Image 1 (cartoon, rainbow, N blue to C red):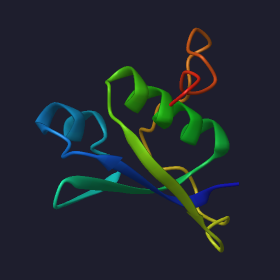
Image 2 (image 1 turned 180 degrees about the vertical axis):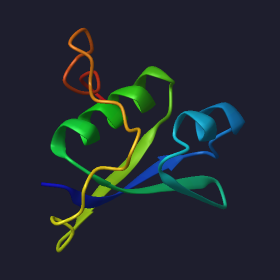
Image 3 (image 1 turned 60 degrees about the vertical axis):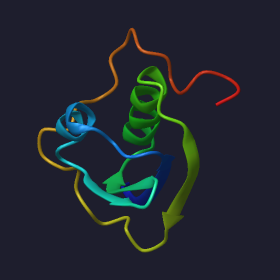
Image 4 (image 1 turned 90 degrees about the horizontal axis):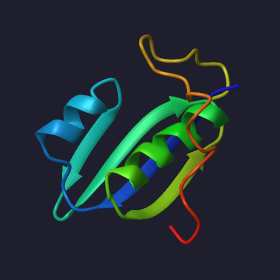
Length: 91
């Protein structure tokens, strides 16, 4: 089941990260970026892991009810078996 998430991160995502997350809706406002997407639990964990690995500081993650009937975005990568299940502790 996919849920609509809003992931708020500190700072503006540069061109490289915006390319990496091109299939997600990213909006930069002031000194923060909001990423909006319909994601499964595994996709959310993988996205948070990717942000953590790139040194992006997570501000908050919000889920919005009623988004469970969406299908995954085409081309979205699934977590690799070698990747941890989520961001490192303390982040």
